[in-house]
Length: 268
Image (cartoon, rainbow, N blue to C red; front, side):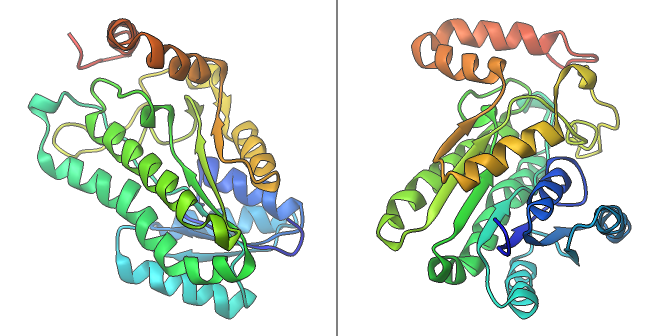
């Protein structure tokens, strides 16, 4: 990835920031985006102190015009786009029967349409460079999770989009990677939306027991270098995908019981 031009959406924290560090430390030119200017500036400052060549751009992936601006700014800075990493995302936790439908709209606008917009405006340059489109999906894109209907739907949609796109660009030499982390220690659960759209605030899971964002990013970097098509992470994640294909009914009970153990779980 030396001298490659990389765009990472949602790069202010978590997996996105860790990806900026691993790509940058391997010689890539990196642009990260984020909605919160303060957090974005803090991330850029921290990465720069580690010797990473990084540019920050305040942008909201759910706004189509911001994605067009992002692609144009990357071209102005780098003169090319080699890799787009669609990382920006938001979670949720609430029973569907109690859920304000606006929450699902917001989830889809960020997790799915944000990826669509970013890919649309970067694709012409990625075709020129025979580069990569990377989507940070989730195990929830293979196995729907109770109390996370909107999140699961957004990740299933992302997986389908990327699978179709991968087939479309076969002859263009473009690489498409669907990366599906399992539970990873990030801020996504703290920032997850509840039934009325308010922020959850605290993670209901034991974050210290999860894969770190840095380890997750290292796997994604390696998969991008090797132009891998699918990456499923963590032993629990791989087992979930495997078992769900063979025993979907049993898995309904298993995931229900597992998520019902969470602190303040909405599952009864």
